[in-house]
Length: 163
Image 1 (cartoon, rainbow, N blue to C red):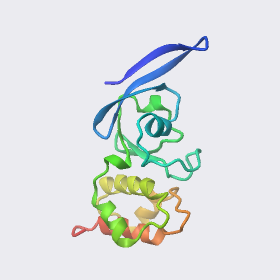
Image 2: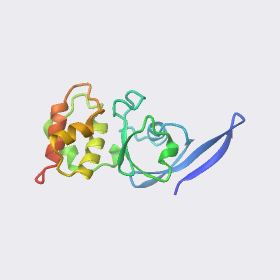
Image 3: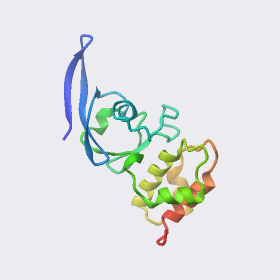
């Protein structure tokens, strides 16, 4: 599944991850196990859809799914992803993406990938969420442009049977 190895670096022993599963594909990455998952995705694998926002896990721009659960990849060490399925925005194919476009749920677009990933996690868990469910689940995903009402509308419409 995953490979964890120890390698010498400046006379210190550091764990290194050499392979992870991203978007259904086994990918080779050679990085310290303590590097943030976001760094491995963006810098080692070229998956730049996941954004760096605050670097503290507070804004949600870096949200990815780890075994189907939303996590902040900027504060999740690569070692936590070893042996698990990582899904980035590049691996999401869901009606929510279309409803984001139809509802104009983005302006600058910086938060969009994290919002969609978080919204998809909610819709997989709760296929027809209430407005309160959406607000509660999306709390912590920050949109600097303030398109929250359109984001909520997009998630609601994606959760309707005819969406």
